[in-house]
Length: 278
Ligand code: NAP
Image (cartoon, protein in one colour):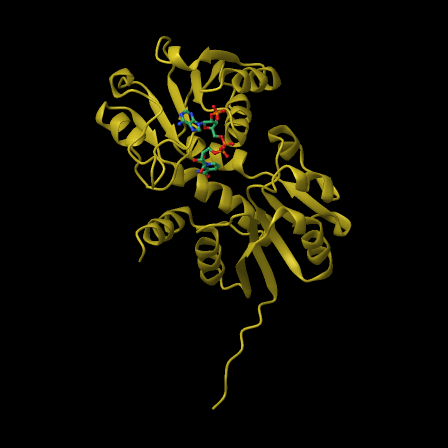
């Protein structure tokens, strides 16, 4: 009996610690198969003390690209040959790819991922309030600035963190307790409130303060429809669930590694099936 061995021409993967259950391998491997590419995407749990060794391996082995997640997104900036402008703006690297002359480049695709659904729906945003001031909020603020949103504010449970971010991006600060007092057309949830598990019943925004002209954008993508999204929809708001940003940032990685477009509708279906455990 002959055993078939699959040796991919291109290898990609994700590093993080703890890596947990990432959707990225399911999504990228589906996209490679669909595009008929001889490639494989793996999950590489990597503790912080192994990061430098990992970069040596990337430079030595035929690794085409890497997705980078917590806690490596900041430290890895100093280990690559260059970082892109958008990565410098966001202050974190979530993607490695090979640039010109064999240079290892650190990029950030969260910004493109955040913008993708807004561009697809031709959203016109005049004012926006970002809820949360962590790493993801930086990509959101950079995206809102790129869209030319004229009034942007940030609110966060820890005021000092919002103030620091507001200085970096030249936006306003609203105290967390006063977040419902002023009107904003767009609300972006960049906190983990609503995430599957212990936080699933939580929301960063009281239901009574949604109004129909608003756009509610959630970064949380598991569950697919969070309490924030459900309540906004019930109030008549336009909504963008977090899966749109997740597939958008993955599509940008796929483009960097393969030069091809990812089918976003199929990508959303594959991720939803993976979340549902099918
Ligand atoms: P992070 O750096 O840990 O920041 C978390 C933020 O949420 C902080 O501002 C924190 O406030 C706030 N927060 C945490 N618990 C809170 C609570 N109980 N009440 C109020 N505020 C609370 O996380 P991150 O990397 O920015 O990620 C934020 C969320 O975005 C996560 O759910 C992540 O999965 C999601 N995300 C999604 C995508 C996507 O593609 N859809 C991409 C990136 C991130 P303090 O400063 O007071 O602690």
